[in-house]
Amino acid sequence: MLKTESRSRSVLSERLQTLMADVLAGNAPNAGRFCGYCYHPVGQETDLCPHCGRSTAEWAPVNRIPEAVFAMFLAQRSREGWVVRLIAYGGLLAGIVLSLLPIAFADVRWWTVLSLFVILGLSYVVAANLANTLGDAVGYRWGQAVLRRRWEEFVAARERPEKP
Ligand SMILES: [Zn+2]
Image (cartoon, rainbow, N blue to C red; front, side, top):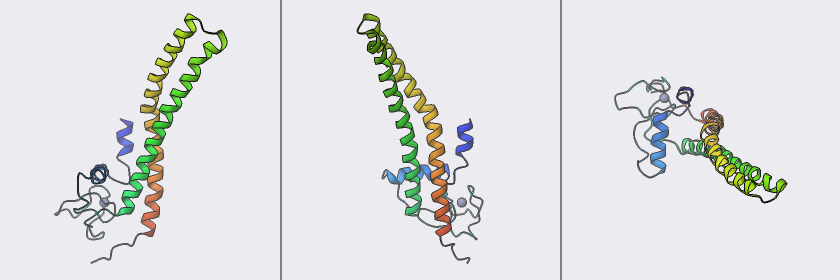
């Protein structure tokens, strides 16, 4: 619930992100009618962007998404993936170390071997769950922070389209 709420506040709209993922995968062309401010896909008849609320009269629509927007989208995605993988592998590594402790301190016995497999199994489940919950949440925040910073730089450097 919280996730959906905070996700909708992203500078790049959900639809734009889906479209960019499709374009990057080669499943859609980078063409259409996009808000001149935030690049949310807008219909031919639309004169008010539903994502950022800016009018097409003030921000002339463009017919393709700029490369810089793809670059910041990729940077955001890679940060998200990074955190999830870091937590998944970090959790597994911690589990491996933990599972070896009983053998290290009490030698190889039936119960230290058993605990090795139990701890390994548990840490796998815990690491996967942590990656999907904590990793996803932290990764999302970090990705959004990176995206916002790059977006602000982009907007500051961008030429505002001439008013007709
Ligand atoms: Zn817009």
